[in-house]
Image 1 (cartoon, rainbow, N blue to C red):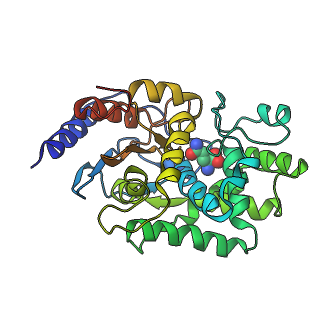
Image 2: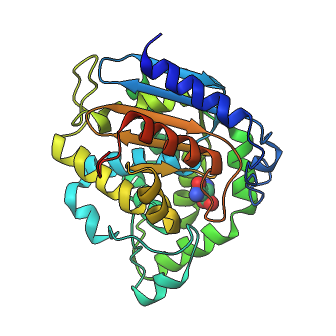
Length: 309
Ligand SMILES: NC(=O)CC[C@H](N)C(=O)O
């Protein structure tokens, strides 16, 4: 057992004993059914060693964590032209906020708030049918993890498709400014489905390795993106990955991170590790409460904050 294995297990044991678990997302009916008692933590270091504890292999809805991977794909497709459609500044607003869109002429602040992620999805969709775009996203997740079993939870996708009125409002509003090229229903359909991809902490940590290692999978040596692109995606994760809780996450954890309302968090310790934590209970900003607490403990004990020890 390595020092890292011991620390990861210790943190999982500490989290299991806590009663402050936050509240599971209720606005997507299917997510409201998830048991708040789950907790998982997986860390994969530069040598490919996997330290896992708790419910490391339980699949959960990755939700907005998918936005890291759709951002990567959209940048691969149209490069820096993407930044004409979506900004890269923190919003200081909730993930589903609509107010900034009117002031900023339909251009979302960043690719991680819902409006921005819908605009990014629209880029991936262009030139394809919705099911082809989804196929491309799923293939990318399977390639990153070397795991062909990764799939979409259709019940979660359908649940959001039935109730996602606010996302429909955001998409229609952007469409009115000419920011979306495709029919709103198509773009939203692809968005809801990529948010509904189900993955475990182990699979997510595997998928995040390229961001921790200059754009490459350190085990196979396969290049996913250039080192500069990996660095810039990490920068956007640090400043925008937790919405209006991004400052707090940077202050406490000090790592680029992306949360999802399924309770997952992907965090990157550049050059050191890809990390996934999961606990379904959320805080007021819609970020996993114990996920953040666990990552704060991990980053502190390992001395991994990018801001110093
Ligand atoms: N923060 C999130 O994970 C939000 C994603 C969710 N699919 C939504 O659009 O509301």
